[in-house]
Length: 569
Ligand SMILES: Cc1cc2nc3c(=O)[nH]c(=O)nc-3n(C[C@H](O)[C@H](O)[C@H](O)COP(=O)(O)O)c2cc1C
Ligand code: SF4
Ligand code: FES
Image (cartoon, rainbow, N blue to C red; front, side, top):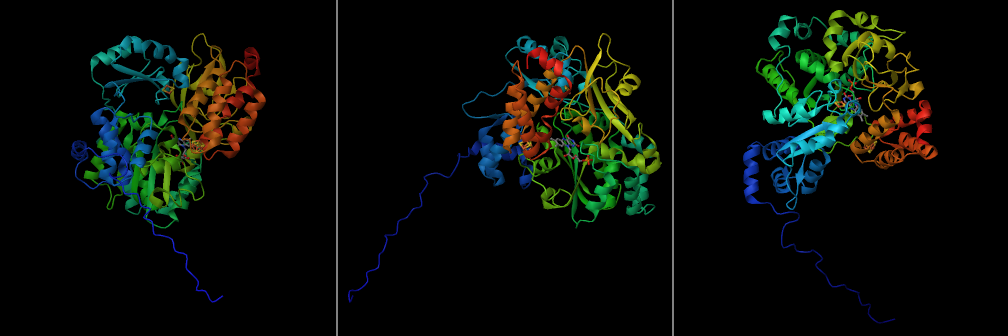
């Protein structure tokens, strides 16, 4: 035992691999110089990534992958992050070195339900041959103009009631930028009493509490889909610590919905005044407006109106207003996904809690609202809570703006009492059914809100009235189907949309929408399997997209068994 203990030593090995070149793709210096020229000299912030991607794509016509590499370097972001974000959004065309760039002009043909019913699938078959190989023709989900179905978009220019002839004529006209000039100007808005209420607020003729109480009493509920009481939301956010932010949702991606666009096109300052009143009442320091990419004319117009207000501020310490451009992802309408997108990331919904009212944009308490919710503020406060709540039918209260499309004589936005039935809406507001069409079915709340048969034509259309039927009103997008349509085809169209738009974050939705679409595309539906799948999607999806995606399919099974018998299910 007298032997000396020998220590065991391990030779020190340098495990670091010495790279010959930096990690990732090499930056092409010419591309980098061009990129710096395109983006200007101001310091680049990570939340502006999507804006920069738009600048590059607008200039180049697509996103060459070398520019993504240079952009990552310029912004000090990982290349994978830039690539992931660019490839998440449908409107970005990322082109690798070995790929062929897309043609300079793209024609998007809407294949949403109302457009499909009006013949867009036939157009999609014929147009590529007509326009030739130098123009790209692709299907697009609802572009928010369903009352003019079928719709094509040539470059940025929408073609309503599109035909081969009108699409060709728009291409031949050679002007592919949309302008929107017919709206109530700032001067005219002011002449009609506009911004007087904001002035009165600023000059202490109303207290913040008065305004919030009035909105609480009016019963106004958020008009983006979830229907959360607006006044209550204002109170909750106002009690959170400053700085507080606001995010305005004009993503309007729910197929069948176009009310926000129409109202914005008519009267942008009514919305801006509502937004500034909210900012004043709650003490908001910065406002982000998220506008869907499809509304090109609106974007240019709104940008000009915001700049006008910045040049002539309506209040001391007017909050900064920042307009952000979407990039073609329906999921970015979901509030937490929208916030991720504004922060320059992929639009993937967050897990809640915490709610965005507490931890929202950039980690700050955030008031998030649909465009139309803010559009109503001025009128409700001027006319009073009782005025708003005195409207309504069938024991419901308030007014709703319905987007109506499909087989009616006069589609469009319809201001109607909350609680109106579909039959009243068709007969009293839409001029009845189209000649030769018999009312068969309807979607009460866009793609997510389910499908009901014409026999259930007496349900009051409002929040909380449709759940018992497996449906909801959402953003009040009503699509009317006739005896010439099939609800099982409609369900296939809608599930295809959800499959394409699922953000892919959670399995029940990513796999479930694809699986459900495959199942309902078969001649005979496997009903037990579909039922199990619906349940899993409802129970385990993170957000409303996956939870509501099975609604239409479940409604077909529940209300339209005759269609499934025909197909042999
Ligand atoms: C999949 C999905 C898509 C949505 N899309 C929109 C949209 O395009 N516009 C919108 O205002 N709200 C949309 N919402 C609802 C928002 O998450 C949120 O509830 C709403 O913007 C809140 O504003 P409000 O209280 O004024 O209604 C969507 C929700 C889900 C689940
Ligand atoms: S439900 Fe669908 S859209 Fe929502 S987080 Fe999951 S995968 Fe994304
Ligand atoms: S614009 Fe085509 S379905 Fe909405």
